[in-house]
Image (tube, rainbow, N blue to C red; front, side, top):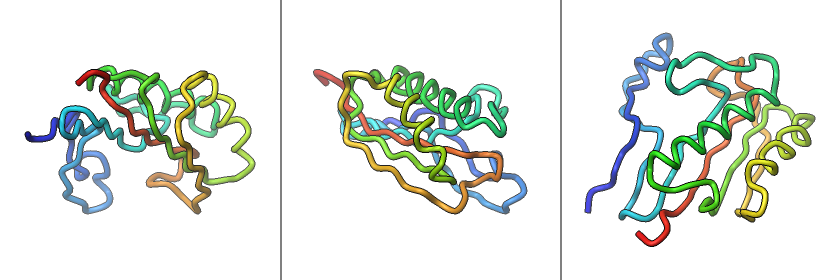
Length: 138
């Protein structure tokens, strides 16, 4: 069974200034049941416009809205997230980010890993969140 790839893109279009040429996608559904969501940031996926520049709360809300939308496109939902990884560029953002993520995932109880990094792919991005989920009864 081939994996299903949702919202394919090439890095040369996303990062034109970086001389990259990698074929990627926002979501992979592997073996029909496992859903892997690429790290999401404060960016509208339909327009590629940054949301909440300088505002970690707004970026977190957008990242979680993206994850919800992408999971639904893959046939899953937030309730079926098994693991999230949260990348922060500043540990002082942790409380605000985790409160928002907690609101979106109330009652889900995923495994969670938090990592503080020196930077993300663009300087205006303050938080990135990736997720792994399942498709129920697939």
